[in-house]
Amino acid sequence: MPQQVVNLAVTECSCGSEPSTLLVLPINRVLACEQPAATIMDHIPIENVAPFGLCTTESNPEVAAATAKLGVYTPMPCVPATPAPWVPGAPTVLLGGMPALDSMSTCLCTWGGVIKVVEPGALTVEVP
Image 1 (cartoon, rainbow, N blue to C red):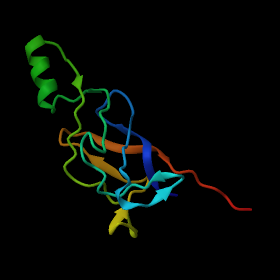
Image 2 (image 1 turned 120 degrees about the vertical axis):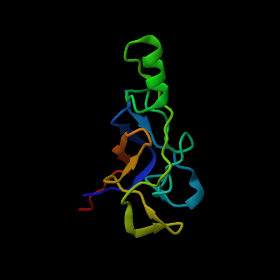
Image 3 (image 1 turned 135 degrees about the vertical axis):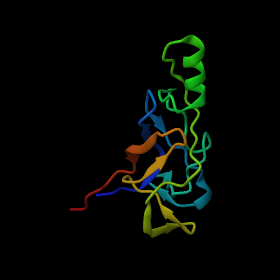
Image 4 (image 1 turned 30 degrees about the vertical axis):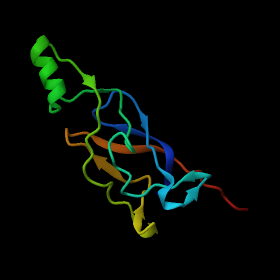
């Protein structure tokens, strides 16, 4: 079952060398588990989507250039390129007029990486 994603959720990119965190600013004034709740619009590089260590895809011009220059495959520091919102989000749950970001959503990097949520940060509490 999808869960609400919040500030400091753990994310990973299929082309990154290490996990990262999603940074959610409190602009929607909605909290979940005492953290700002994310929407599909929390996709801005560096502001929301932090780097994933080293980028490992040669479709990234920095990786391609370093590999060509050195003559051997050379990963380079990740600089996320996420121009489009997360999809699909939770269209029936709006936060600040935008669909909430749930744990089943993904975000695409221009260089071919698929970013997904590993730990949404919002805990599910069962009521007896």
